[in-house]
Length: 164
Ligand SMILES: [Fe+2]
Ligand SMILES: [Fe+2]
Image 1 (tube, protein in one colour):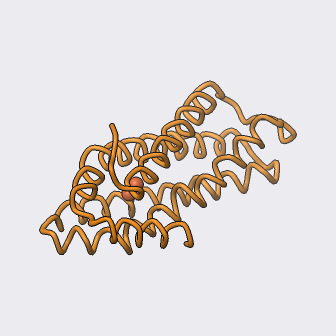
Image 2 (cartoon, rainbow, N blue to C red; image 1 turned 180 degrees about the vertical axis):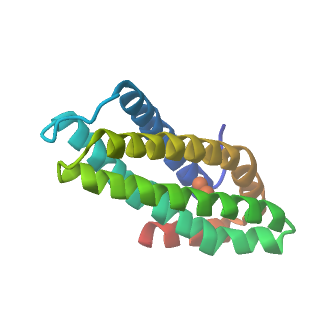
């Protein structure tokens, strides 16, 4: 899958980073039936990775799509696609809240088996929904956008995203 515009290439790279993170999350969480020990370094490093990805590849990325891209889709007659993707963002945000509050609890070393199961469920649901969303955007949003943008619009969007 290749794109001509800078912004589509950038968003596509971030989707790829999300696929990699979600693969790691799925592997780690599905193997761990009981809460990990509070000083378990591997888990702390995965938690940090998830938090960093949330900040960049999820929140910054989502906000940019909503503010800069949905209006362009609306104006070009693809408003339904924008609406569908926006609804998915909302659901992912809700699951992400459960995931981040579970991680905060885990960092404080207060996991019991029930809290761990809750975090595990949130992590697996988050991963499944985010992967499916990013795949959908790779196949629908980015090809539409790649055709739609003029080189000037592309430069402007790419610059704005880099500054965000
Ligand atoms: Fe999105
Ligand atoms: Fe995206």
